[in-house]
Length: 242
Image (cartoon, rainbow, N blue to C red):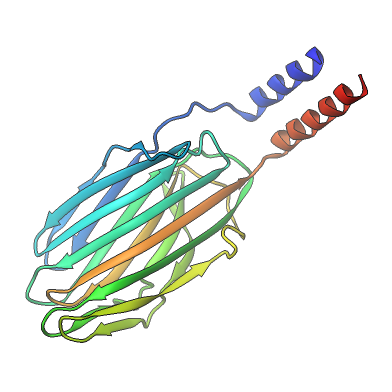
């Protein structure tokens, strides 16, 4: 028994160690009217183990945004989950193109990962009706893994051309899309230093959009970690024989 435990500790040391911590979340919003704002809200315990919540309200030239996000501390788990509710109000007198980026730090480990994500929403139009659409041929939603300061795109949803309109002073559903279902099952690169979601879309004057989104990463253990797991199984079998 003593040999098995010491071997596991040694194997763990070889594959790396982690200290649990609150994920660092960063938010940036830019509108085509010239406004640009950013924030780094501090997380608070979300009730579930290793999960933290982040809330931020940001206003810029001609727009108002709010974020209610959740991120998982991946130093304590092979799985990282990031997402939540994003609200954007175009307070200007003309349509704007918005660029929004949200990211959460992760603990780089594993040799590869399984990924998945989703996005859906609601458009609320003003007295002239509502418009939510792709801009400049870009996908509206893109998930990425950041490694060595490089954002590596993993998947895109709501691809161009995409458009949802609503009647005057009315709401319209933005059909949900997802990848890696059942989430997470799509193979991707190893978990990096951060995971993020980038949004690019056009929003009509006086309109509001509420988007619910999520991105999930699950690290595939490195060979050393798998060896440690196998060793745990050997120890268990030895205990049953004693």
